[in-house]
Image (cartoon, rainbow, N blue to C red):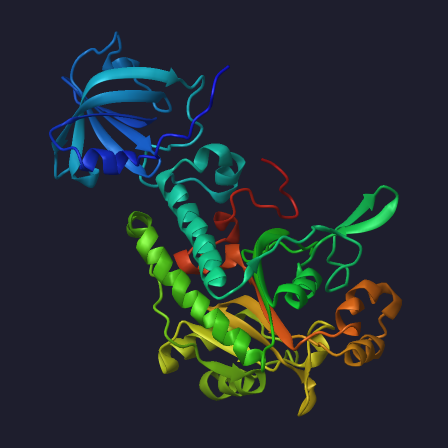
Length: 440
């Protein structure tokens, strides 16, 4: 009988080489590109986190420089030498090469170039391959760190990590933008949001957060929308006002930006990413936002209930130039266009205690205070001609006592896109799903 022990410690190949100048090392990776220099060849090996320049002078183990091809998976050994001209400041003079796997066709995209120079459709068609490019890897290393930082901060603030079902009996927001399913003969849907479940569990734990899939059946094809995306959500009970939620997001974003700077330095340098510094975030009301656009930009808005994309950009331009912030909260949206669970402002019921957070010209967050009183929630459902009987399970939350609470949802891909200056949200999704894309 074999006994399985604990795994070997993970070793970053770049760090391994950097720590052993003048010594022999062994590591595994994939041939990124080969530069034939007549008498020798530079073999650039792609490892987990970067590129390592290797020097192949002679035939090794029956392998010559002409045998080395892009895409080969290899194990190499050699001596590390300082080389200021090489990436990371060193190169490895090879003494052994072992081929672990080889490609059976020519690469469909130029992975070995600094920029692949391909259009977005080609990038997405060959996504399992194009994601190997250092710039693509850097995007998603940063995105992964964004999630890690979010989770770490939430847990530090007493939040419990939850997971909500994605097959549901009713949509959290209703409407036509919901995917329908045949669930063993019953009508079911893909979840538009974890909203109901966040509220349920805020009543259990007080504070909860989730990182999970969100599904919207909206028939759009823009650079800022996906039909499936990842939501960063949290909900918190025992709040005094929606300001508590906004303060929690401000603290979280500050933590996440610092976390990314600390954990993704090589990727940030590669992408030349500008990560904002956050101390406070300015906040204005929806009414004042409309007035600012009129006064500062001569823009008279025709949208009485929301902000159009050009208006989001204007407000961010104003926040950056006048307030020194790349973020701005907009609060107190008209209640008529906010979800039925949003609490109305007691001083003006035509307005909801609801907010958006804008970042570099785009809304990345929607949140606010929720209705916690049973009769108030029933009355709002009735006022909107919604069938109360369809929300019996949701109303269990309110019927048996629920503290004041609120929360928000952030689109991970949108935040990544704005953070890294990407032109299309599909660049910030591993395998994006839109109206025309189901593969790969």
